[in-house]
Length: 156
View 1: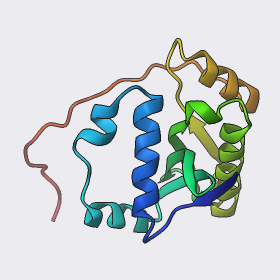
View 2: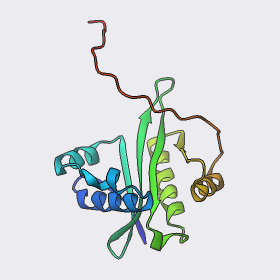
View 3: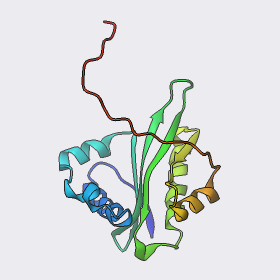
View 4: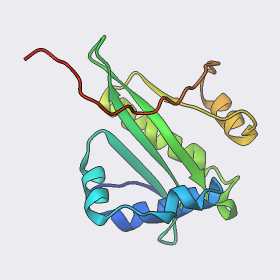
């Protein structure tokens, strides 16, 4: 098994990762029903703020991470938000998730990020156990706020 950071031209591997996410999260609708265009994926992969890592076994994606580098205004630093992490069921309990997180930690260090943070859902005991083993737990509330169309007044 090898861990690889995706970049420009890795659309096919990113699509494979979306299949792994769809299966692992039992949400094939979100991760596969309306696939993005190649142009969209290429633009996403070219962004410095988007981080995608895959675990490869025999050339196939068996796990991965998507994360975002979030610059902070209060100091010259950033935080890395680990957004999605999944490993194919057939490859779980082999240290792949831990290896993916370690690779993300190395990327965070190279970028000068001061923390990698992640959320876990209540009841997702395997994720909670993994993250507890690797970091300090904070009990927070998460809110989804819908976008609101309209114009924004600003100074010229």
